[in-house]
Every structure is written in C-alpha cells, then in structure tokens.
Image (cartoon, rainbow, N blue to C red; front, side):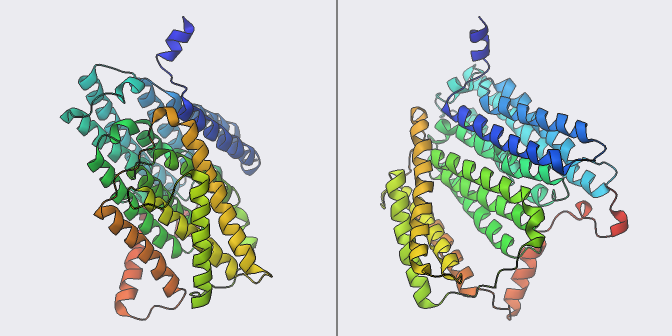
Length: 443
C-alpha cells in the first residue's frame, strides 16, 4: 500500500538516482565548508536549517513523478535559495540580489505551472513518466514544451535571462556554491526529464542548440574580461550552461547529464576554494601561440578527440550531430595542450599529448557510463546534421581561434574598444545589487 502510494508521486529511475547522488554529494561538501565558513554568524543555526531544507527540496524535485509535486518542490527550492541569498536583509545590495532572483524564479515557476496545466489538459495524466511517452503533435503539447524551454533558460541563467546570476555575487560563498553547482542545473534537469517529447520536435531542438551556442560563446567572452574571481565564475557558469543546452539541442541528452555532473563538481570546488585565489602566485601572461606550438597542440587535440570518441563510443561522422560534439572535444583537448605547452616544464610535449588523451578518455568514459545507465530512457538520439549545425560549429571554432590569435595584445581600433566596452557593460550586475561604497556595506 505504501509502495503504491509513493510510486504514484516518485519515480526513482536511473536519471533520478544520478541527480540525487549529485545533489547529495554537492550538498555534503557545501555543508562541511559552511560549518567553518559561517562560524560566529548570528544566524548560524538558521542558515543550516534553510540549507538542509533546500537540499531536501531539490532531491524531491529530481525524483518527483507527479506534476504537482515537482512544481511544489521547484517553488520551495527557489524560495529557500532566495532566503539564503538574502542572508542579512539589512545589506541592501544582498536584498536586491535576492529580489531580482526571486522575480526570475517566480516567472520560471509560473511558466512551468502553465506548461503542466497544458500537459494535464492534453493527456488527463499527472504522471510525468506517462506524459513523456505521449504524442506531441497537438498544439497544446507543443506550447507546453516551449513554456518549459523558456522556464529552463530562466532557471539556468541562459542569455538573455542571465542578469540575475551575475547580480548574485554578494551571496555567502556556500550559497554561491550550491547555486552554481546545484540549482543552476534545474533547467537542464527539466529538459532531460521531458527529453522524449523534445526528441519528437526537431525544430525545437534546433532552437535549443542555437540559444545554447549563443550563450556559450557570450559567456566565454565575458569570462575573459572580468576583473574579479566571482564575476569570472558567474560568466563561466553561464557559458557551461550554454554548452549543456547545445548538447540537448544535438539530441545527446545523456552527454548533457554527464556535463552537468562534471560542471557541478568542478564549480563547487572553484567557489569553495575562491577565497585562496588572492594568495595564489600570479601566472605569466600567455600571448598567442607560435605556429609550431599551435600545430603540435592541434595534433594533441586530434589525439584527444579520438580518445574521447573511443571511450564514449562515438566517431567522426558527417551523418549526425555527433560531429559537433567531436569538434568540441577537439577544441577542449587542444586548449588543454596549449596550456601545458606554455608552461615552463620539462618534457612538456609528451606531457601535453598524454594529458590531452587521458583527460579526453576519462571524460568520454563518463559520457559512455551515463549513456549506458540511461539507455532504458532512449534519449541518446543524435539528430541529422544540417546547415545550422555546421554554421554554429564554424562560429564556435572561429571564435576560439580569434581569442587565440588576439592573445593579450592591447586593443587599438575604435571598433574593438567599443565592442569591449559593450561586452563589459552587458556582463555587469544590476546596479542595485552592487555596493560601491564601504559605508554602504552593512553585514
């Protein structure tokens, strides 16, 4: 009796188990860090009550199979995160950050509620597992998928809904960590949970790909021009969420899940260790690579992409969108090799090749494992490669090459300077969330 009751509200499939494990791991890391970081705070115990409730609400959300339960858990997690962001309401900038995030979260949750109503009216079902195997040809079902897509872009701070994320930097470090490594992934979770429906709509997948690519390129450029570590990490998160969307748009949803797992773990580490960045030794400035170094790094990148393909059981082909993923693997492996080749170490050429192939193999193996675990969902379905995919891949490669060629050379042309200023201004936080004067800092 109890099992039947719980099974009507929860669905512990492989995807849910992966997300629960991820949320639990990140939550434990943040709690451990916060136990020391928040020591001496007047609201110490209240902070941990809210933090634990947040983790539990996210676990309920990722395991929910009932539309109403998922919606309630989503609302609860958003409210709790906002309360954690406004840890000290007397600090006006922190309160403004929380309110800005709350507006975006409310809009996202409202869109999810509207989509769920359409799902129920179209199918008469409340079970998500049942709904995702329904026919999507009806207009109301398509509208519901579009609403969920918009909600996911808001939740994951995808361009142009990124402002709330870059304006949240005055949150306590543990809150920033749980936000960037946990709640920011809820947009990706929504897309993967309803992925069987999206796979029947190639046009929507193409839109997801384009939005993700624009966000990835924009976030990467903004990250390079930020003056402090937290702003850089915020733009990095925005960029990584864009790459996650790109993989969803390619029909490679398990790859997107693997990306979320690695991004969450690494971003939690970066935020929880960000306090030590001021004590780190400054690295030498890296200019654009010489021709021979770039050629060797490219060879390492090719080796890395082949290693990634072997581990993930994917190969170079122009038949489907796996080609785009292989190009991304090539760029990432080449960039890793360039970083090593610029370092002043012995045997760096051998180390660069070994590191590129090893890192690519382990990442590819993680994609293979996630794909294998989620094979029953049948959501690894590469799409037919078309002109938009190819143009997007060319834009990604050209953007990367342009950043390498530019290096750290000073900007001289008026057009370049104007573009720099516009990019810097576009990536800034809402003025109300910034504390420009020391006297305004009331914490």
